[in-house]
Image (cartoon, rainbow, N blue to C red):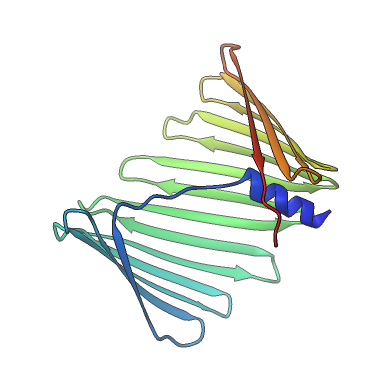
Length: 226
């Protein structure tokens, strides 16, 4: 059953990334728990973007610092610190960012482990606004449930509720999203994998806030592993 699920994930979840530039990566030697990396991207016109990343993870303490320098010499930075309290089952992370024009933002995130999942709270403060979100994730006997609420700078809240149930040959997922003005979108997805034909099928029906419905069916054939 596990190999079937792995095939399902591989067939139903895919991404294609096209990069119109050449990338060079150099990694500096580092002590245990530390890593340093420099990336240079060269575009078709010869202009370069340089990035430097430094990371450290020791004794439950995490830090990461990144700097990007564009072809015009302007710089953007991001600094992150985090820590995990194993006894309390709590992860805390703070990120400070500054854009190439000097605009700053910060994000504070806390993830608390629960008996059947986790609860996550995030506060993001931008140059002129603040957004808060709360999410509850609960593992069930045959899947999971996730509920999330996001409150924007105007104090209006958007919510989403997702339920996923595993089946013998795939899964069923239902998602409901309610926007800040009370309009609702629903989405029902059924996915399955036929081991005899190595075929994965996904049928997704989306109903918009005005009642219009769109159904999309995707079928892919998976090449079996040698």
